[in-house]
Amino acid sequence: MSTEATGLDQQALKSQNDAAQAVVEQKIIIRGGKPLRGTVRVGGAKNAVLKMMAGALLTKDVSILRNVPNLTDVYMMAEVIRYLGAKVEITEGQVVIDARDVRDTEAPYELVSQLRASIVVLGPLLSRFRKAKVSLPGGCAIGERRIDLHERGLKMLGAEVKIEHGYVYANTEKLVGTRIHLDRPSNGATENIMMAAVLAEGQTIIENAAQDPEIVNLADFLIAMGAKIQGAGSYSITIDGVSQDELHGVTFDTIPDRLEAGTFILAVLATGGEIVVEGANPHHLYSLMSKVSEMGGEISMYAPDTMKIRSDGLNKGTDITTLPYPGFPTDLQAPLMAVLTIAEGTSILSETIYENRYGHVPELRRMGADVALTGNAAVVKGVPRLTGAEVKATDLRAAGALIIAGLAAEGITEVSGLVHLDRGYEHLESKLRNLGADIWRR
Ligand code: EPU
Image 1: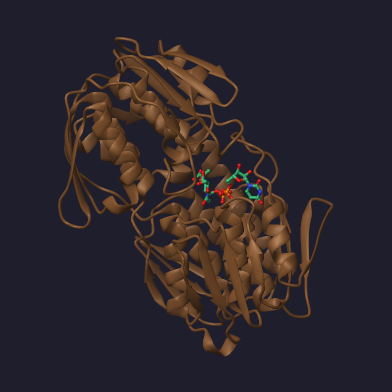
Image 2: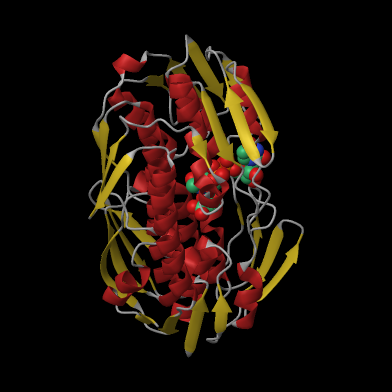
């Protein structure tokens, strides 16, 4: 990386930081109690697009991603791959990545620490350049978030991997395919190993792979690029290595964000009303849809990408355990809890993916929720109403939860910690305003 380029990146990073600082001081204000009505369109899936941006590094060509959401995480990932030498242009809903001149194989702490997902550049860099040095992301509000499975998988492919001075160093003369069984179906490990295997020699089989739709989207993107991958979305993914010349740039669509769709669905349960969610894939939301019916909401599928949800705002409590896909997603645990705080009866939520994903609980309590935590379980006793309060989001999905709680609460709720919100929800307040919510940013 030349000094000049580093200087440019520093400047870009500074302006990102300044923008984030401005957001730190902002709040979302909600006057609760209005039912939601109307139509909302969800954007592209953050957790797919970030990985495809990293995947674009595999080819010495230009890739175009479409249906890209306008999120700070997308801008941060653009900074990371720019740092590596890619040219990245972001326009409305689209990212163009020219990875022809990527030369650098080092992703530094100052970038990776701001975007944990950037650890997925490790697989593509190692695959294309046979070496990579990627900072460990550091602390996280929701859990430990280890990368031991990434490390072990890459070692099994023949890389030497060591962690020193806060960095993962990976080097190899060549990667050779093998059978890798993951102890748990980690998204990040599946993505890193799958991308590393694209240019490896021979066949790699990932067993107990993550089956999330975002993994399928990434695999389809890589296949369109020329990679040979089968089985994404199932227990076992097979990758037959190809040569660098067989990969080429593509234009590719990001799938809809099922977590954004899920957040709107849960919001209408909390407030009552009727909404149509467009651009969502109901097949990605079965675990939530069955809970919605159990709680008393009416949910129906229209066209392949449209859902209608109706609720009188009076919900029955339910129990859930968060599980890897297709189980109930951990990312909707907090938004669901917001609804259950005012549902009838007692609900028990068990969080099995993260050790510490209950940052929203003390904030919901400030609004009158009755939630007790014991180990990884939350016991939620429904109360007749929440009351508006000043609350602070501790992570992205906690932000979604507090906004849902605010929409249903009596009086004014002020949500701070919007840096988290803007990482993963595109224009949430204006989309809710279009559905009739009394919500604004200040
Ligand atoms: N884990 C390990 N070792 C590993 C990898 C993971 O112990 O090597 C553990 C983690 O500590 C965690 C669990 O396994 O407790 C799940 O981790 P996973 O690797 O599946 O998650 P991730 O890839 O780091 C993605 C999403 C998360 C989402 C999880 C689970 C992105 C950018 N992030 O994280 O979304 O919660 O999968 O579905 O794709 C978010 O969007 O803000 C977010 C946190």
